[in-house]
Image 1 (cartoon, chains in turn brown, purple):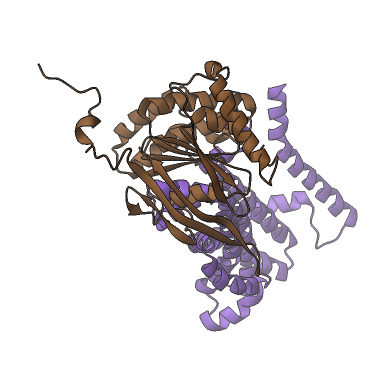
Image 2 (cartoon, rainbow over the protein chains, first blue to last red):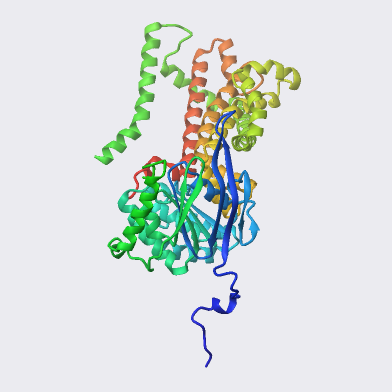
Length: 281
Length: 261
């Protein structure tokens, strides 16, 4: 009889006291300047430094125009920072790659592909055999609650359904980090709540690293292990708050939990106290 | 109710044609002009033309030039338009050139091209090519420009290289717009086909038409107009069938999303 450890990773991961949790993404003094007109420069991000630990759900919270999405695009490799560096697993980020999967507010689905075609796109691109990619994709579509819609085109789907497809499409190529750019921002309140719940359920199964941009305090506290509060003009990190709430989180329990309520109230108060009072909606 | 609506939709074009012919008939009868035959006289002359081997060879030669001119134009213009839409450098280089060529009537270039290349097929096909190219380039350009950046980013994250993104994302995403350009191009192909044959008479449908005009055979002239018009309608209908198949995913009948989060 052999003794199998509860988590196989305990065997693999070297335990050194200097590295408590391994950092997957490191952002080091990143600044971003946009030229708004011929003479004017806009400092979107100023000297941002941030470490994201592997397996953490981290939200970037801030008012519109604080550069939170830009920070996400820099990690995605879609935007090159004006100065500073971002690394993933120690490698400098030079461009987009399948290790970082984006989910955009605009869904950005391929409208000429069916739901199944969209989800299969990534695995097929990575060279996964068609039959295998299809089987995996069908399972993912079922997981995001869209079984029966495999052959629908994006245009036939509601916003919430489109975002479910977008999530499945990104999960399909197994990125190590999910980059979510206000993914539920375009959805109505009811749909938004349902998707938050479903995202947590999915996330709690494999605990991928998630970088989640939002301007909703409730959403950030509900989902995250860590909330990075940003302020605007120029975009800076104000504070990083650890959200010490038990998992798995259930919405109906959490909303009644005084600790949850305190986090929300405290964060809202901190934004109100700043000079851009009330700009966090 | 639905069946009735569908019936009306199907019957409408036929009714429009009959109405047009009726107006023509009445106008011709009222004017009593030798150079304006009635619709019935013109229609009667159609079988004569289509039954004549010489005429058929002429018409087929026209269609062949048109097919080649259109095909080559589409093959060249779509990649060029897409590149212009995605690269500022390429757009900056070609835009002024196209702006110069766009407003020039392509038939006006015929005499010059004829001096260089003669009055044969190459000249006529080239004029058709020029006529078709510009709308196809323009619509491909606009279509490529409008492709959502985030869609390309999604592709890039999956590992698609820039050239692959152009072929596998920009091309399909811009396809509805590209096909709008091709449809305009098809009509222009027909127009430039006839005008090129009007200027360089040698063979073709335009040649029959203008020869008949010279000889005062007005029923043949109008019969040719009917034939060319019918060709236009048929080509457009065929194209529309193909187009609807290719861009089924963007058709308005898919506009009503299901209500489910």
